[in-house]
Image 1 (cartoon, rainbow, N blue to C red):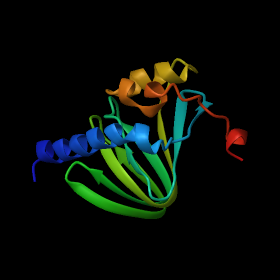
Image 2 (image 1 turned 30 degrees about the vertical axis):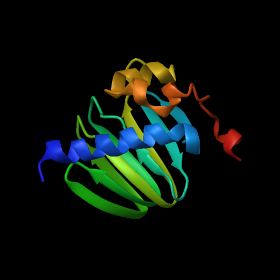
Image 3 (image 1 turned 180 degrees about the vertical axis):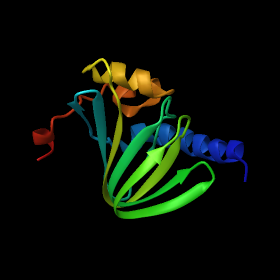
Length: 146
């Protein structure tokens, strides 16, 4: 299967999920953490929920913990437990969480920007499609999740 066909499948599934989102109403909680020169963006995907990533504009490192099947390009892979996954520029993923899953993306933040929406615009080609932008979801502190 070509990369174009794989991306088309992810886009078609994403379009259907976006259509159903207002009916189902599942939100993906999102947090940002900062260290010198770095930003880590963490999402929590509840069990039984499909999630769609925005295409990356730059290389990133992903850290996942849980049980999730992910389509990335032509590859379909199940990650159970803890994994560190490099990500190339242009990657777009689709995932289904079999159990509660935490997914953290770490990327460079050389100017120390702390505006989460600006960072999403800088690092993701489809920042306007991200749930945090579409639903004006408040970004959370870890204590909000307790």
